[in-house]
Image (tube, helix red, strand yellow):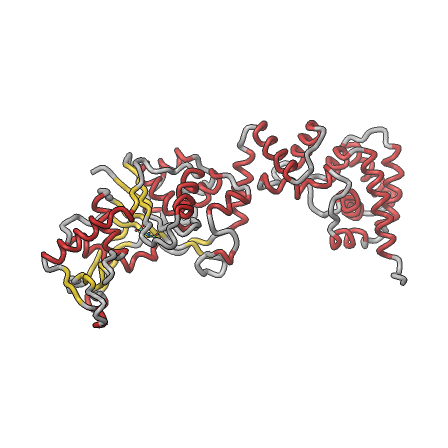
Length: 443
Ligand code: GLU
C-alpha cells in the first residue's frame, strides 16, 4: 500500500498554526513512508472561500515549502460526485429522505447510522469507541441540495485514495460518522491520527487573542520558514532524546506517531524565538548581514558605513532573534536620535554616586590611550578598585548613558564600537539629563 496523506483546510483567509501543523505532520508522515502528500481545498463555504482565502493557503504552503505532490483538489468542483454518493446511499437503503422540521421547503438526505457502537483505532489516541445511543442519523445533503461536510470529506478521501487521515482532534467526534460512511460506501476506512490541540499558557485553545496565531503573521513578523516548521513539528511530537533543532531530512527519518503526544501541546513564543535565533545563526554570514541591513533600511537607519554595521551585528551575537528586530535592538548604534527608556535610565542614575562616577570615568575615557574593549574594561575596573565601588555600580549607569537602555551587547564592546567621540558626547548629555531629572520642577 502506498501511503497517501492529505491536508484538507477550509479556507478562511488565515491559516492557523494548528492547521499548518497538521499539514506538516501529513507531509512528514508521507515523506517518511515514501508516499504522497496531497492537498484538498474544502472550499464549499462560498462566502468564506474567496479567491484570496484560497490563495492564503497556497501562500502558506509555498512559504513553508510543503506544497502538495499532486495538483490540489477543490472540493467545490466535486458536487456531482458528492450527490452521486448520496444517491447510492439512498438506493442501498443507507440513507433516506426527510422533510426536516416539516417546513415544506424540501427534503434533506439523511444518513442512517448502523445502530451499533462505533469504534476506530487512532494512531495517537488509541482505541476509541462511541455507543450507538450517542450516534444519531445525520444530514448528508441539505434541503437546498448542498452536500454536507461529512459526506464531501469522505467521498473526496475515497476519490483521492487517502490512506491516512491526520488532522486535529476536534474531528474525533466526526470520525465515528465518517467510519460509518466509508463502510456504507463500500470503501475501506483510512487509518486515523488525531493531533492534540495547541493551547495557550492557561491550557485554552491557542487563538488570535494569545498573539500571532496565523502563518502569515509569523512570516510578517520576520520568522524564518524553517524555524517555524521545526518549532511546529516539535509542538506535540518528540523526535526522542532532547534534540530540538533538526533538519527536514532528520525529521522525516524520525517521524513516528508513537512519539506524538495525545494531550494538548502548549505554544511557547519564547521557545520559538530562541529557535528562530538558532536558524538565523545558521544562515550564511552574507545573507544574515543583508537581512539585518534590510531591517535598518526599513526603519530609515541604513548605515553609510557597512563595516561599522557588521561590527554591530557581530557584537550583538545571538541577542537578535528576529531580523525584523534588528533596528529596534540596535537603533542607538545608528543615530543620535535614539529612544531613551525612561525607567531604565532613572534606575541606573539613581545608583549611589552614579553621576559623579560617570563624570570621572568620562574624563578618563577622554584621555585613554586605547579604546579597545579589553582596555576600557581595565580602565573601569581600576577606577572601581580605586574608589572601592563594585563594577556593577559603574556599568549600569554607563550603559544607560550611552545607549538609553539596560539591554544590549557587552558594555565594553559596545563602547569600543560606538567610539570615543560618541561615547563622550552621550555621557555629557546623559549627565545633563540626569541633572534635569533631579532638579525640582518649576513653573
Ligand atoms: N476542512 C476541515 C478542517 O479544516 C477538514 C478536516 C480534515 O478532514 O482534515 O478542519
